[in-house]
Length: 285
Image (cartoon, rainbow, N blue to C red; front, side, top):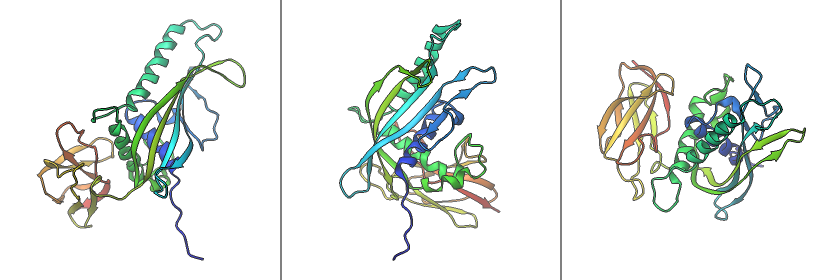
């Protein structure tokens, strides 16, 4: 029998990547999200005893699309959930409705980003890919586990390139009684694992003082006008270390100490981290 390496569980990857993207859009904190594998009670309680909205992420079912591609087309539910605004002795139900509507609206806005005309939400798909891939190096923001990056090491090649809104479901009754508002939103997403330097530049460190990257220009992603080499001490706040001419493929980082590094492109109408290279941690003398 051959010795096999497990392929990534795309359902799990997709949920983690969407969580990372929604958090990047300020849609909830790490503690508010509950994924399929989470066995905890799905409630988030504030210090004053009030309930903070839980956000459930469930990749429910999938089919391969196209056949034999190992690209999986998943049906994904995003469910912000609150105690009902008609609970006994609730002094301010209208304020609750504002919170419900704003959070649900942020979910929809995050899942509806596009730079292409015609309702193709490729920008959302690409940013889900970028935020998902970061998990392999940085771990999940807010994850109390010290092994968060290791736990997410399988995300390094995650890729999503299709997002479609399917529809919604409203109020539901909690099994234990009491009214719970559940603003269920349903999406279809395509995901796989992909190593392709025509989409994401591949960044490496020579273990001395030089960053190098490869990039294969295509019609979809041509050579950018400029390359941005960016650094960060924590992987959250990034600053530009240098802006290089089109065609550049290396950068000397002598004397910069230990930093996280990435390479992004400068193009009109494209956010500068979309798409970005993989992130490396490098120490240069």
